[in-house]
Length: 238
Image (cartoon, rainbow, N blue to C red; front, side, top):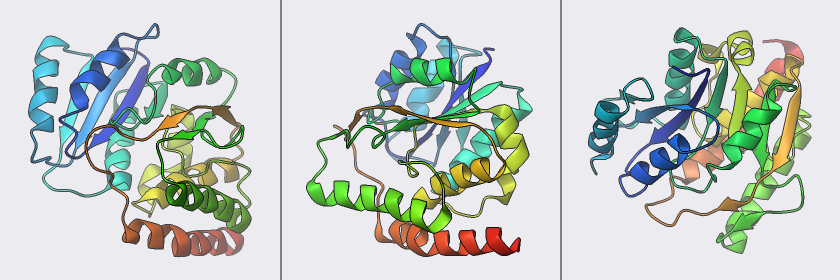
């Protein structure tokens, strides 16, 4: 086993999963891969299990019984990573919206920083193939999170992040309450409140070519109102 684990949540990613695993395994830095699959009806887990037979001790899977959401997938993945003593833990999407090559850049910066974020907004707006409405929504969500929480991060909803394991141990992943994109903000906010060193590096985010987006209105609602609750709890230490 290597010292670095990439956690990739999946739901109906059969069109992408083979290529994303192959690309990660081909990088100059050695990463292990943990797929957390929400019982995808398209056979995603079957494809991953095929890799496991060929790449033992490199590719792993947690197969869940039902669709439970992004936050719970990462919490299970984080606990798995900590139980297996990984030094660095990475979040990444399965659909190539995050360029696997950028994993190496995130990894390289984790020696000096505790949290390294692949940021769409640190140098302007670097998003490809999104409609204007989606760009405005995402950018506004990050701006809103900075205003409400005081989090000094320009891309608070980024799901392309590397963490030192000490960060995940310190914040107690089981205490995280959100499950959609607010989960990403909550995780960064708790890292910031615990005084960990955070760095944003620029990436180019490319919208998926295959499969369907997981964004929905409940995720947006959670982010808008959940952040206010999170900030109040931090102020009054509820």
